[in-house]
Image (cartoon, rainbow, N blue to C red; front, side, top):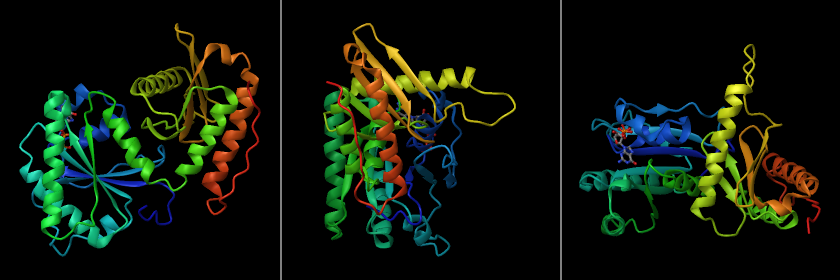
Length: 331
Ligand code: GDP
């Protein structure tokens, strides 16, 4: 993965033509804006360093192409911009003619690759809510083909692009960001392993480790993700945060509404339980399990504490590859 210079947090740069949807993505994913409100966003024409670094696991910067930014301008410090960044997300408006966007994409990735070979290139084929399923696929195929042809024509085959279909009107934007962020976490296999151990010993169906602020999941167990479960867990986080913000804040402190003791339980009428536990300042575990298996909550809670301890170790002692966990079985 890209260099995480002196920082453990994944750093992501968001680029694309003006009006492609960058500010909207940022507002919806990191600031809980509702998609309809983005219609009234002012267009920006400068680099925005979004200050979410104190509240989120992910560091995030947006960058517009209003036209006048020129890579060959000597004042443009590409070493600084691309050097420390783990992933470059390039947003393309799929509802518009994307020829210009493809040219900018090519220019950007070739320039960035020269500075930083470890950088991941992620292309968001965005605003696909307006497209039919067939047309969506066709657009993805076309963009994929043309972008890679451009790279091949300039002998840049070693540059790899990943593509995601996204929209702020559904969960696809969160899902895509989750994928992007996961590639930047060197500890991902360990996290997945810990989640696997946790769910099998606690009779949990599915578990997500969430960055609470953005609702990006930074890891999950290795059973397949179905969008509905992910959406349920996202909705749960919204509910928990809303209730905490309304009732959990004291006037005289700046203490976060969400803290290390936060937990929440939601019973659905189909015999399923959603269970949320806070892991650290940024992360929460959200589990889906059957109500019958929640009888032994003590065991689940005990296992969770072991899991939390292990997660702490994973992020603090990054050099130690061995993490010790002892879990109790709920069978
Ligand atoms: P920026 O200049 O790249 O920051 O673009 P903006 O975030 O200002 O977005 C430009 C317009 O695109 C706004 O009117 C948004 O409401 C709209 N937009 C952004 N994302 C989506 C999306 O996923 N679907 C649709 N239909 N419109 C979007």
